[in-house]
Length: 167
Length: 169
Image 1 (cartoon, rainbow over the protein chains, first blue to last red):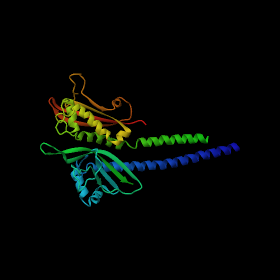
Image 2: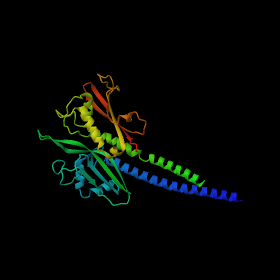
Image 3: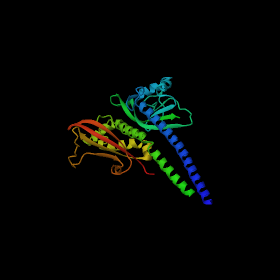
Image 4: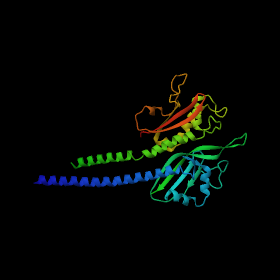
């Protein structure tokens, strides 16, 4: 009789373990699914951003003139949010080895006021965020100033696009 | 017996979690690798003469005019392509910390044949990075690009491949 009771206890314990495990697994899967969907959202955003005619010269090549113009238009962020949705922040940085200096009305591609960083839409304070970084190019109309002829040549720099999505 | 059940369930959970994690990132890394190769090829080297202006120009020069000195008395194309690509790729934090890379470039005629080095009688190749990656059987992320150039021997396509593989911890 005691053996049957022990066996029953054991079977019930196994059934409970399976139930707990399956519930836990389901919760974990939902969490993984949510993270994957968020990452897919960031990727879709990046793909459309690097093709945006508002900011790029061609696919993945940002135009510094367009970026600086965006930084100077007061309601540019609202307009971009109308296209790309809310809850994001983007930064484009040149990899020129110089300290970061934000581009705006009072900065220029060359000389002592040179800049190498554009911030598009302000950062937000949210609990969760996902940041993805991809290599891009930045095209500057004023790239080289030739000493002999004083000609100005454009230059394509290596850079990164950092996109943060707030979740 | 209870311990036995816990061990089995624990093992199963770890296995399932590993499986879920492995398939979570490939699309991002594909985009990253492709954009890395494309961006590096389109970046200026710092020299303004037409043979050395962009990394892709210098790549072509390294194959067909390897003794050309960029900027008059600067480095030779072959040397510049090595230092520029190594320097540019190493600037990316993700690569520095977690990935090994190998860049392979090979010129081909439009008709499809490989360009042969007349001295060594071997196909022309430029390889930059971790050479062991080419033969290793590990998970790799691969991006391909083509550069079209016209040389004295006719139009050429340079096929450039970037291979990334995660560093082992």
